Image 1 (spheres, rainbow, N blue to C red):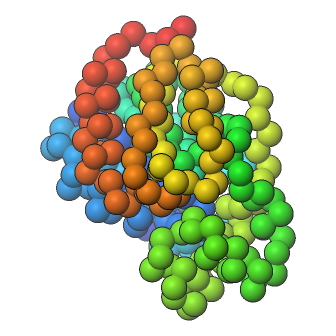
Image 2 (tube, rainbow, N blue to C red):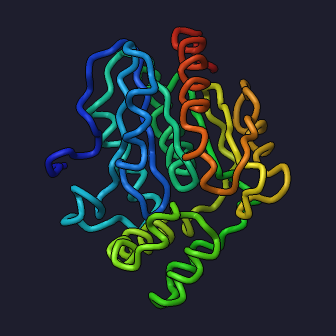
Length: 254
């Protein structure tokens, strides 16, 4: 698979002994995590995953089928990973992708994550009908995006930026709408994060994660709605760093 400049991972790997990969939410791109980079210690190589069809990869078609998107991510990670411990963090669509990617990666014990961190999405009781939204006309989709606040305010308030993002939003929602929960369990610890007033999550929805691993580390509840993570970047990054250090060299779950 040939990547455009920047490719799947931004910035380039620094070679630090611990690795953290950040997967963005629907309609967004790798740049939503750029403020995280200086928040992590120097012994962390932090890379933001850039899906096709947006920002530097806008010339590539966005992938609108979940299985194809996870397969493409799996291929990219197989080529990128080495023997260093790593964690995956994703918010909303990014959490879904991190979960399914973990299931794919764990088939090879050498590429098994040391930690899966999921934010703002649950395998069940996530209230957004993504497939229905993906088929709306532009005006309807823009109105729903603004009402549900699942993109940052600066995107929703700028009609030109929002129009440029619509193809990626549609592809991402279509991919998310193809998810059918199978109850699959991951072989690594899982930590969850959610907002106190997220309209897309039913009460206690994040508790679903305790059934997906032998080592559930709990859910950190932070003040805010679906985009709470942008108000708590330091807290989440600090928590992730401590958890990855703790679990980096632990024996993998069987």
